[in-house]
Image 1 (cartoon, rainbow, N blue to C red):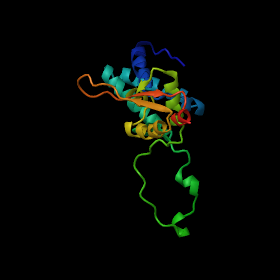
Image 2 (image 1 turned 30 degrees about the horizontal axis):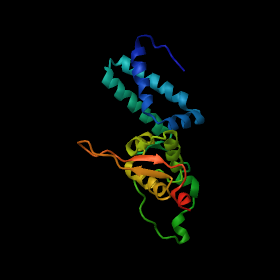
Image 3 (image 1 turned 135 degrees about the horizontal axis):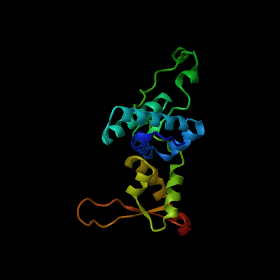
Length: 196
C-alpha cells in the first residue's frame, strides 16, 4: 500500500524506514492477523502529523517509533528484551469468573516481570539450519544477533547441541582487544555415532 502525500512524502519515507527495526516474524504475524495494513496507515498518519508540525528528521523518527509502539500496545503486544510478545490466552479468559484461590491451591511464586522465549520454539533447529547453510561456520555473536536472542539464552540452547556432537565450538585467536566469540560449525554426524 502506497500513498502519495505530496510535500509530506519525505516524512512518509522517514517514518516507513522505522519498519525495518521490527522483526520479520512479527511482520508476518501482523499480516496473518490482517492488521499490517492498519499499521501502515498509522505510520502514514504519523508522517502527516510530523509534516504538519514541521519536525526535523530526528524528531520524525522518534514520532514514528512512538506511534508504532502505541499501535502494537493497543493490539496487546508488549515490548520485552527479546522483542514484541503477545500472550495468547489472557488470564481472565483461561479461568473465567472463578476465583482460583477458593479451590484450596496455595499461592505460587511471584511472576517474573520478563517473559523469556521458550526453548520449545524450535530455536535449536533454527540454529542448526543456519549453521548447515554456512558450512564454514558462524560466530556465536552472528548467530544470536541474527536470531535476536540474549547471549545467555543462546548459550543455554547451544550447550545440549555441543554435548550431543551436533555442533562443534572452535576457539578463535585473540588479535588485540576483546577476544572474539567462538566459531560454531555444524557437524555432519553426531560425535556419538562417529565413535560407535
